[in-house]
Length: 329
Image (tube, rainbow, N blue to C red):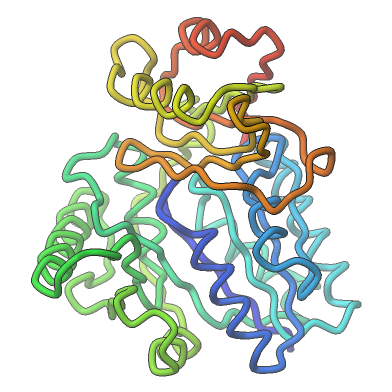
């Protein structure tokens, strides 16, 4: 049987960073793995980031977005094809907009159930999780953590032990509160939680590798059908790094004008230095670094993911006319 791990987390929680580290660990243990990335939108920026981190050390595939039914069919088809290629484990990195029930429905259906067994479900949650999220995001956080064998606390670099402990208590209380709201039967007060403060230790990876998964009942919502989440794509972006930082800061700080932008990520050319750079930004932080991907191998593209975004104002801010809007998962 091929083991399959599911790595969940809200948009911008740090799933891609975690999965790159986890994949390196598994490869060092001699596992033959494949990563199946399902980005939110028609262009997989996360797949490009993973390729930069992992190169040809493992196979990285993606499910091209479509409507929800189309996405499920493509996910199923990918798993069938993987079963013929001799992998020992498949890591599934869904977008932050993902229904856990869909994953299990596909995994336990024929013929998938002949070849795969669910192993670990890891829910990545940021240490600076906001106290209040939209109703859809609150639901997704609860849904994703409801079957997790372990919660991985990300973005703890620079935090003191007492600050990490405080973040753990806040997130646990957040999940317990939302469990009541969505009638979730999972006891979040007892779900194991691990932090990045021990990143790289064998003990940490051993715990993650034996996390397992759980089950829980809860009221089901279909946030993929109500238009809660959007994504916008902007191509041929050429700005200095400082101009990009200024623009991104302005977008996150003015939701009345631009809407609720959750994440901005992608690649652009720094016109100040001529360098090819990648950006990964949320309202909490903006990371911009030189990209290992050679120009020409990846198009200059930014993806904005959010709720009730103002396409007209964002388009004007980027000065971009070649925008693609995709409301599907």
